[in-house]
Length: 279
Image (tube, rainbow, N blue to C red):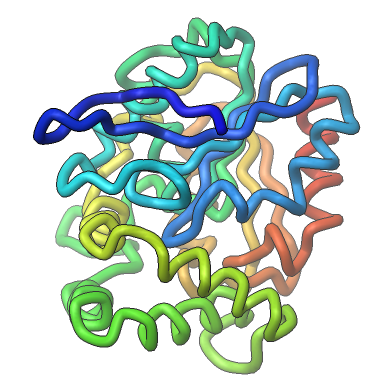
């Protein structure tokens, strides 16, 4: 299995696992919380068949990557992404970030520029800023919600993740999940094996990191794709504002789409992204 080393902790390498498939223009896929690169299995075949080299990696703490105690912040995540791009010699790359993975896109461009970047796709992504505050009244996360995450993860983590995965696939704040129980069980199994510390720390990172200034540095073609019934990262608080902040950004809103549109609305998602990549 391919790995790259992005650092060390207590004398041990911190390695990121990745899959590198197909040939053509490179596309790097950055997964959401609390999953891994396996969450892209509905997208990888379509991208490869369309003539792209597809790299899907596991964020530190998740999937088959190392599970260090620290480094679960967006400066470090962006540095990990830069290491991957540099080690693989990628250029003219399209970066696609789902959910918290959209934060890597914003912070990477802000820190390292766009010399190696061709296009960006913010997919159900957390920018520009989820924390509700006096200077960000439209944020979607307050202290009560942050406490719900923290108490769930530090309490009965498997039970909390089970509840979260159901919410992940439920349109809006009520109703029933729109994917099978088997799909939800699969995602739960992936999430349960992640670092408990990383799982907790990432909630702080994606809830409290302000990407508003980062978005002003984006100068490449950008697509924002988001479900209009996303109860986890509401479109109005995130995708809509991201599209408004990036000049000439394209927007594709998936009607009835919950947060987990990669699985629930796979075909529509793939068609919209492939159309953007080909444009």
